[in-house]
Image (cartoon, rainbow over all chains, first blue to last red; front, side):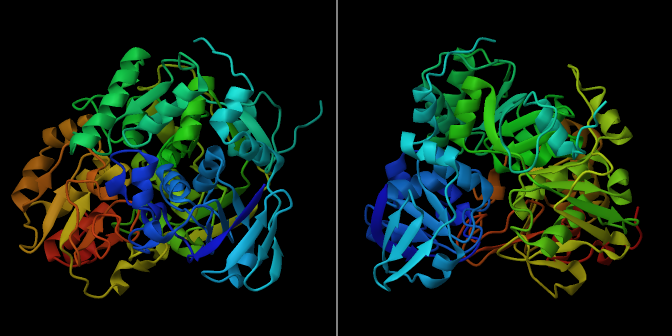
Length: 168
Length: 428
C-alpha cells in the first residue's frame, strides 16, 4: 500500500477533545465530524486538507477519550496516515479498527516539516520526504494490524472470517 | 509439579480469560469478556458496527450494558436521537441492563453500585474511564465503538497483554488528602504518557486504607497517565463493598510476590498536600498551597471520578453553614440516583442549597463540555473531574483546573483556589 500527500504537523499530547470537540458528538456522521476536525487547534484544517494528506505529530497523539469519532473525523477529512513519535492506546486501536494506518517514527516526527510532500510505503514502513529528499523507517506494523488494514478494518475482517452467530 | 512463571494480578486475570495457564507482556491474546459497556455517545456507532458484522443477537443479553449518561436527560434533538438508538436496541435485544433516565447514573459509578462488575472479571467499555473498575480488582479498559460492536457480537476482544508497573504509596494521608490527590501527584510525576500501554498496579499501606470511592478515583484516572488499566488487589474493604452486591460467583486474584514489573515507584505520601492540575494537561500538577491566588468562575463537583457519596459528604462537611462566593457558580452532580437519594436523606442537599449550589440530576454533562455548566470564553472552572484539556468544558479559551472535592468546596466559598484549611480549621 502506497500513500502520497502533504504533511500537516502537530505537537505533543494532541488530545481527542482537540481532534473533535465533544460539542459535535451528538451525532456520528463522518462528513459532519470531518468539518470540525482539529477546529480549535487549527481552524482552517478541515477546509484545506486534501484527500490522501498525512498527519504528523510528536508524542502521545490521540490521548484522552475513547471516542472513535476522532479517527473517523480525521479519516473522513481525507487523512490517509498518521505518523507520530507515539500514540495513545485507545486511539491506536480505534484507527486500525477503522483501517486508518498509524506509523511510529521519532526521527520522521522530528525532521519532517509542515507542508512537506511525503511518500509512504506501508508494506516496508518507508517514509520518504520528497521535499527534503530524506528517508526514514517507521517501526514495522505488527502482522495482525497489517491484516486489519488489508481487510479495511475490524468489521470487514470479522465478516471475512465468517463470524457465526453465537447464542446466549 | 512445575511451578508457573510468577504473574501480576493483571496477567492472571487475562490468562484466566484466555484459557491459558500464563500470559506474558506483549503477547496478543483473544480474551473472553464478562461485560461490555456503551453510552449514548459511543454505543450508536457500536450498534452500527454490530449490524455490519451481520449477527442477529448480542453474545449474552445479560452482559451487554447500555448507560445513556453523557448528554442525558437529552440536551437537544440530536442527543435525543442517539438515546433513542440505544433504547430501541436494548429493547430489540432484550438487554437486562439498560438504564433509562430516572434509574440511570454515570456509568462507572453505576455499574459497581449495581454489582455488575466483580473482582477478577474482564470488562471492556466504549469509554476511556472504563478503567475505573480496577478499583475493585477487575481488569477493565476503555475501547472504541468498533471494538464494542465486535465484543457485543462475539463476547471476545483482541488485546495485547500490558507490562505492569507497580506504584507503592507509603505513609499516612494528611487531612483533606484523598485518592484524587494520590493519582494527580502520580500523573504529575510520570506524565500523561508515563504509563502508556501499561497496567498501573496501585499498592502500599495508604491504598489499603483508602475507601472504595478513593480506589475507584485512582483507577479511573489511570487513563490520564496513558495506562491500559489501573488495578488494586481486593481486600476486606473490597469484600465489604462487593458482598452485598454480587449476584454471581467471582474470583480474587493477587500478584505473585516475585512477579515482574517494568517499573516500580515508591511514594511517601505523608508529606503530600491536596493537589491541583492546572490547564491544559492533567500532568500540570501543583500543591494547592503553591497555586497562588487563582480566581474562579465556576466549581463542579461530580463526574465518574468524584461524584461518589463520600465525595458529596466531604463537600457537605466543608460547605455546612457557609455560602459560596457571590461571583461564583457551584454545580453539584451526584453520580447516581442512589447517591442522589442518600445525599438527600443525609441532609446534604439542604447544606448545598443553603450554600447557593445548583444540584443536578446524574449526568456527565459539564465534564466534557456537554451541557449543565458549559464555560464561556475566558472563564475558569475548578472541577473534581478528570481532564483539563483546551476547551474540555466549553469554549476553547476557557480554563479547567482539577482537584479533589474538599479543595473544590473550599474554593467555591473563597472564590479562588485554596486549601480546605483556609475554610475549615480542624478536620471534622
